[in-house]
Image (cartoon, rainbow over all chains, first blue to last red; front, side):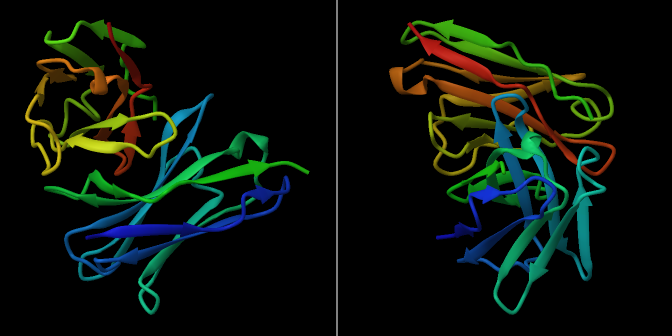
Length: 123
Length: 110
């Protein structure tokens, strides 16, 4: 059974960096048939896909245009996990952040989700 | 990338069928067979109900089905039950190699 366990701070100061980690059990971050995603949800923005990383003979990363200049996703094969870094945060980045596994024909359907982390950006 | 368009709310009585639409463009919904549907209960993470337009993953009820015509995808729930009451979201792969969600639809079972 695949499980994703998120960790990271729930409070981040404006202009600082938001960092979250998603630990994978029951699958591999290097899987050739999965993708590993970050998504966030807020009342004002709804569900918003942020980024994904996946391995197909080499590593690929894709980012949402809305955050592309501020975001980095990194796989960590030694710990079988992946991480999110979002720089220069503002109160607009306050949201529940989820990690999720992508599967299906081209790994675009997210079938396993983390428990969610509520992140508040405030001084 | 603009969000996909869903109705804000739909409702139906137990036993009835309802359909939720998800409208995009030729750069997302219309261009790829990579539309997914998610059910979200209050305070919970979304749950995948339909993948790749019409595939139902194990664990999803066979009362849920998906289809697509042009730039609009649809989720149909038949034999509506009280515990189907939830928020439903569609998502699609896009020509920018990203994913985009719909704004969500609140389903009320009368």
